[in-house]
Length: 99
Image 1 (cartoon, rainbow, N blue to C red):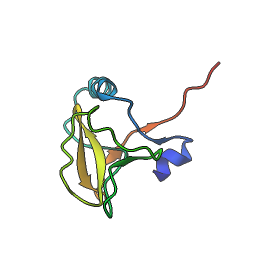
Image 2: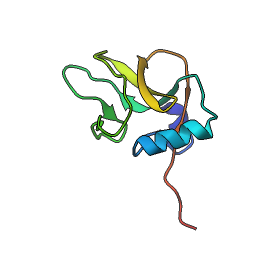
Image 3: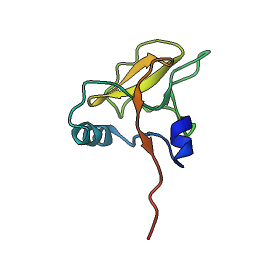
Image 4: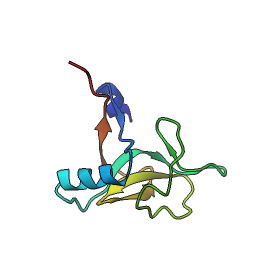
């Protein structure tokens, strides 16, 4: 989060499964995990995006399970939870600018 913030961006919050598949192709079908802007449930809350919206689990291929305190990662075409303290690469996004 801090690195993205320094660059004037935020961790990735994908629109839908199509965007994840586009990223998977753009990254040449990686086998590793990338941090995205998704936080796992704590104290009975739902999975939540960086922008404060709840995760719509019908829009994505998910394997989230019931791991409290987990953070979301992009792996392949899906979203997968990982321990938030793991050292992984990340994907930032920023709003497009009209020129």
